[in-house]
Amino acid sequence: MFAAMGPEFLADPYPAYERLRALDPVLWVPGIFGIGAWVVTDHAACNAVLRDKRFGKQANKVLPPEAIALIPQEAEAIVERRKHSMLFRDPPDHTRLRGLVNQAFTPRTVEQLRPHIAEIAARLVEALEAKLRAGAESVDLIRELAFPLPIIVIAELLGVPPEDRDRFKQWSTVLTQGLNPGAGPEVFKRVGVAVRELDAYLAAVIEERRREPRADLISELVRVQEGTDRLTVDELTATCRLILTAGHETTVNLIGNGTLALLRNEAQRDLLARDRSLLHGAVEEMLRFDSPVQMTSRFAYETCHIGGKEVPRGAVVLLLLGAANRDPHVFFEPQRFDVRRENAHANIAFGVGIHYCLGAPLARVEGEVAFGALLARLPRLALARGAPPLEWRENVVLRGLRALHVTG
Image (cartoon, rainbow, N blue to C red; front, side, top):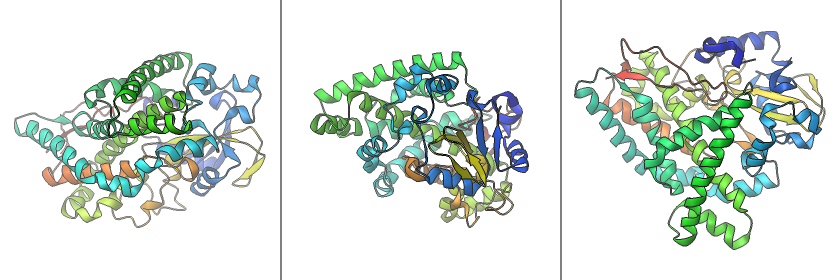
């Protein structure tokens, strides 16, 4: 459905969301995921489903094998690899796996990283500014800041070499393509190859940490796995894979999408450049206005009701977070970008409930630091004239730009 909408949808999915909302905020759409799905654009309904234990991540709990076989995302090879990941598990496994790494991503722990993140961001922005001052007509903000900042931070946290970040980007790009509702066999073949390559890379790092532990997260996970057997080898690898890929994908899109929103709304850019006490709320508004994660899905474990609709057991529910974050019943004039919006924090860009994004506190701090550094040194940042047209990644789940050419 969404993949078929083409470049126009990738460039701006929000008119399509509004058309869906006008038809019905909880709408049955045949064909999605191979078996059809209930598409939800309502903020309250999305919020409720994400918090409801009657909806979960595992198709095999409610669907027969012949139905699962029709869902491309449930291809056997893919499920075998991801079944050890907390992202695709329900309690009690999800609770156990998340608990082992949660401490590294609490708001308090992340706040202690802020000075170091600020140092990294300052170096990157200084290098970006230097290129402009040296005569470059423009620089690509995605390449110079949005991508390297979060990948350096998460690589350091895990304990893998940040110089391998281009390899991580290649693997991550392929892995996230497998999330698309319209993904086909060729995509999943590439996903399988990327998973195997990344897992082999991580296995080597994990083995090295067994021999020579360091002060990093992989060493800590190895210690936990060996000491209590609460984490299997496959779970350890899957957890590292998830943290490495998910730990930067959302932030890249937050910084890219947020910068674009600022540059398209110069009064808001100027306001934020003058008063950086607004940064925290501005990041929330960026998350709401152009959500880095546009959609997520659940399986109904019981027959229940969503927004007055009876949803049968085994149904797929597709929650359009990007649409929910522009629900006019929650956000006044939702199509308007306003860094002083009082209820911007009501966005559900990182989800809610037990699968609330583990790295959300880190992404928020990275966003605040990045925009603070950028506007401090380049308060007149603008879209470069004569730059190539904006090109969005071909992914309807994770919304982000391939490049963003700017000048100062």
